[in-house]
Structures are given as C-alpha cells and as structure tokens.
Image (cartoon, rainbow over all chains, first blue to last red; front, side):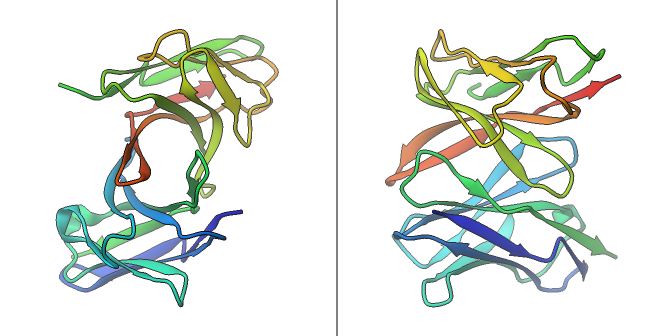
Length: 112
Length: 114
C-alpha cells in the first residue's frame, strides 16, 4: 500500500521568506515521488520528481525537494517566496503501482 | 503544440441528466486517467486506461463510465447515478521516464449540477 500525508492544509509566508511544505509517504518498496502545483481553476503542473537518481531534486520556479528515506519524507522548499508562488501544492507517490496516490494538498499563501 | 485538452471548461447539468466530458491528448502517451477534485480532499482517481480498449476502475468509479476507442481520447460520462457530481474534473496522461510513470494534466472541467 502507498499513502501520502501533507502536514498543514494552509501555510502562510511573507514575500522573501523561506517556503517549506511538508510531505511524508508510506511505501513498501522504493518509491517515486512527485510535487505538483495548481493555480486556481487550472490543472496540475509538475514541479519536480524523485526517481532515485539523486536525493536532492531541483525543479522549476526555484523549488527543490530532498528525499530522506530514514524519515520517509520529501519536503518541498524554496529559499525566497514570491507572490506568484501562491497556489496549492500536491505531493504524490508511486511505489510500483500503475497509479499515483496524492496528498490532500497544501495551500501556500504569500503576503507582501 | 503538444498537450492535453479538456472541454468544455465549464459545464452545467440538470439533475437526472448524463453528461460527457472530453479529454484529448496529442503527446502519444499510452496511459490516461480521470480524477475528481473536491475542496480539501485532494485528487481521487475515477478511472484509468493503460492501453486502447482497456480500462480499470479507480477509487470512486460508481456513477461514472469511460471508453478508450482511440489512443488520443478518453471521454468520461457522468451518469445520473452519481449522487453528488458537482466537482472539478481533471484528465491526465502519462509516460514512463527514468522508470517512473510521470503524469501530465489537462486544464480541467468544472461541472455544476443545478
């Protein structure tokens, strides 16, 4: 079985502050892990993915995530938030199945 | 321009009516998926298809039906048996990259039952 837990349905940061969105997964085999971003009334856009090549994964828009097997985590970070980063973020896992399992999402709010 | 298109963007339906949502892709992906999104619940898988003329139920298939007659197309029908169909519907397709099936999404269709 595979599952994803995203801690915090809403995260608020000030513009220029560090962004940290948390994702923990459960998997019986080495997983593939993904982060997606969704802007209002749009589809999901792939930010980055972990496929076992490197534990620190860099994505688009300055985001990166680190795979930590011992902590079963794949947290998403960005050093300095921009207003345009305000969106909903989804973590997802695939551990050998044909489908992805998504977390419930974290809404990132950025204040000036 | 390669991508996934969904139509219409907004759809209104009266109770008791069936309605079909369109999803087309020109990415030459083998697999396609339908998700339902409700506020605070993330994405829930309705149906998926890994190859033409074959599809499998996801976690919430009741009240929905699909077909996969062409590689490029995977329409979803929301039937009158679906008790609460108002939601945002997302279609995706996938390709295997570096061993991982990577899904790409369309822009979505928002269905409202009046």
